[in-house]
Amino acid sequence: MDNLELKITANEVRKGIVTAVHSAKAGHPGGSLSAADIFTYLYFEEMNVNPEDPKNPDRDRFVLSKGHTAPGLYATLAHRGYFPVEDLTTLRKLGSYLQGHPCMQHVPGVDMSSGSLGQGISAAVGMALSAKISGKDYRTYTLLGDGEIQEGQVWEASMFAGFHKLDNLVVIVDNNGLQIDGKIDEVCSPYPIDKKFEAFNFHVINVDAHDFDALRAAFAEARQTKGMPVAIIAHSVKGKGVSFMENNAGWHGKAPNDEEYAVAMADLERIGEQLCQK
Image 1: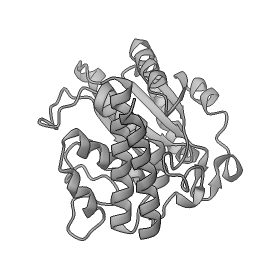
Image 2: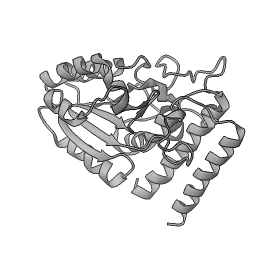
Image 3: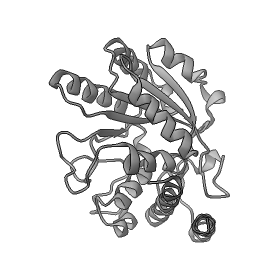
Image 4: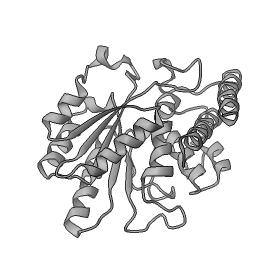
């Protein structure tokens, strides 16, 4: 995909996020929207995956460590062809396979059930180690929240990954600066994030999470890095694309009402129209 196609796809993913959370009357739109470009680049450009063969043992793996942003992952998987886009409106509904957090037993394309903050990266490290032991070429990617990295387990896993030189592992931190209680640097600052990962023997790349040229270069650099895992610190805007959600911690875990949904979709429709004119 070229950058324009990626932008258009990411905008459709954002529409899916807002629609799913509105339909559920619950969920986490802010961090799903901030990561939409990352999700899109991973599934439409970076990773070796096939929705027609989601359990292929040689596929690349993805673990959503910040599992509460499942609406972002679900919207991406749906647009990638893992299941019908229409099913996004069943999010969190009784009997739906699209639960509030990713469930590998029920959702095609989900490689790890996640949600308890800090644990996803440990599973991803295990997958990367397994590939090394088995002589497999698949790569493992995991997405963490910047509030999530306040969890100690994140750094235990990072220490292990750095020590074992897991150069088939890419840890992405969605650094939107906000968590449920407010600004991360006022709740319990994880800064400097890059220096911390460097201390655990990671190759670190800082990137604009909404610039597809920058994302393309970052993931290419990650592939070229040998002998150490990679941490991509993706500087993003929480609620990206929806005017009243952007940089607003209040939209961490709240669903828009009917009026807010209309405004949000109008914002995204306008962005889509502008992209289609390019």
